[in-house]
Each structure stands twice: as C-alpha cells, then as structure tokens.
Length: 400
Image (tube, rainbow, N blue to C red; front, side):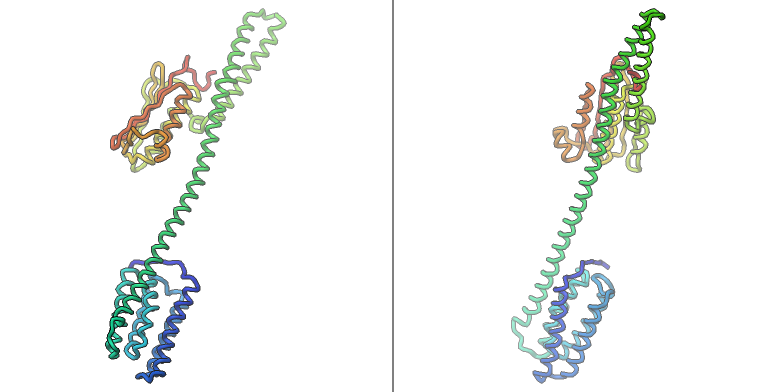
C-alpha cells in the first residue's frame, strides 16, 4: 500500500476540522427535533455514536496517514455517516469535513475515489428523502469535493516543494562545509609543498654550494695552516645544516611520497582507485631516475587530480596511469575510456561546471617549466599528459 507521511497539521486547523464535523453532527440532531423529522431519537443516537467514534480516532495515536488504523477508522465513520444519511437529509453536510479526512489519511489513489463515493452518497440522499432536485443538488457536493481535492493536493505540492528546498539547503550547507575543509586541506598541502620546494631550491642548494667551496678551500690549504681547522669546522657545520634542511624537506613531503618512491605512491593510488566499476592500471616506461621533490609532488598531484576527475565525472570502466622516463624529460599520462568532454569548453568553464581542475594542473606544470596537454571528445574518453624537463644531473630528493 502506498504510504504518505505528513507533518502534524497545525493546531488551529485541527480544531477547525473537529469543530466543523462535531458542529454539523449537532446541527443534524437539533434539526431532527426542530423540524419534527422522522426518527429524531435514532438520528441523535447515531450522531452521538459518530461523534464518539470520531473523537476516539482523533485522540488515538495509531490513526496516522497511510496506516491501516486510519483507513479502518474512516471506514467506520463512513458506515455511521451512511446510516445517518438514511435517517436524515441534513447529514449531507457532514460530507465536507469527511472529504478532508479521506484525502489526508488515505493515499491519493484511494483518497480520490473515496471522495467521489462520498459526494455521490450525499447527492443520493436528496433523492432518497424526496427533496427537491435542483442544479445545486449536484453542484454543491461536487463543488465541495473539488475544493477539498484542490486544497489538499495544493498543500501536498507546496509541502513537497518545501521539503525539496529544505533538503537542497541542507545539501548545500554540507557541501559548503566539505569544500571549506577541502580548501583548508589543499591550502595546507600547497603551503607544505611550497616550503619544501623553497628550502630545497634555496637553502639546501646554498648550503651545498658552501660545502663544496669549503671543501675546495680545505684541499687548497696546507694541513698545518691555522685557517685549515676553521675551514674544516665550517664545512662540517654546513654539512650538518644541509642534512637538517633535507630532513625538513622530507618532513614537508606529502605522506604518499614520504613513505616511498613516486612509483610506489602511484601504484598505491591505482590500487586505492580500483573498484568494481573502474579498473586502474599503472605502468612505468623507461629507466626510472630519482627526481627532485617538487617534480614528484607535481606528478603525484596531477595523477591524483586526473584520476579523481575520472572517478567523479567520466563514468569510465578502465583507466591507465603511465610514468615515462626519457633522456631529457619525464612524463605522466592518465588515460580513461569514459564519456569525455568537448575540447572547445574553456578550462575555467570546465572547472565551474565539472570541477576538472585543469587550471591547477597547468599552473603546476608551468611552475616547473613543463607542459600539460588534454585530449578529449564526447564519448571518446580523456587523456591527460604532464611533461617535465629533467633537471641537469637528474638529482633526486636527497641530492642538493
């Protein structure tokens, strides 16, 4: 059975509905005596029983929209009202609060037929009691039913729209909090990477040059020269500070790189990204060489960003990450067989619509003198390629 759960009706509306139904029942009983109608005692008794059943159901917590208890309660009310219709034509007016009860407690597919049957019963009561048949005989109950249906269905539409907006607002608030956390994390990681790069490229390089100069000076001086001991101590101090600078660089390195090589980090990334819907493969081409920390960070971050886009937006079933070492450069290729996107979409627009992050990848590539290329077409998958020129001497993370 279809269920429909509503929030509690406002207290004022509930009181109005209770008052309307009980007032109409009281009016029916009073008119049975005032108009010297047939069976006034029976009318009063049935009206009283109907009022008692209505009050019991209204107070019962089990009578809720879409429940069997609510449907059973309405059935008992309908039977008693039909009996009252047989006894008194004035019971016709009780149909109007019944419309609202039926539409509120029953699913729409049952509520609308119940309202139609109630309206037909109200019209039939005119004919049963020999009342004068006029256009109002048919228009009144039908118009009341139409107003009740329009009111309840309109309220339900407004309620659904309100719920959708509430859920959207909650989702937006949660998304904003997630974005704020992600931005803080990204900012922290970016600052760590920047500090590692600055220490490596400035302080560590300077200390390494000082150490080399002092070593040359130490070799040029006689061992018994007074200055030789000072030069030796200065060289050791420079060496110790260089080692300390390298420890700082390692501490600021992303965790995926701090615990192993770039190749191992990319293998772990591929394994973590593989699911039942997406298979990610990793391969190395050429002879691996040690790379500076900024290079490893750029390659890893680009792979993470490109693969994240594949998972979130591409709908791909297969993706491949290839790390290629060449004579003068190193390149990273991330290829998927997903839905792709139009190449004529500007990078900034892509970021706003789908979060591709292409500007960030290109900025990272430019900062190291490299290039980033993207090839994609709707239904043809996407290929992201980052190429970085190898630094002179191919020094690694431990090299100065």
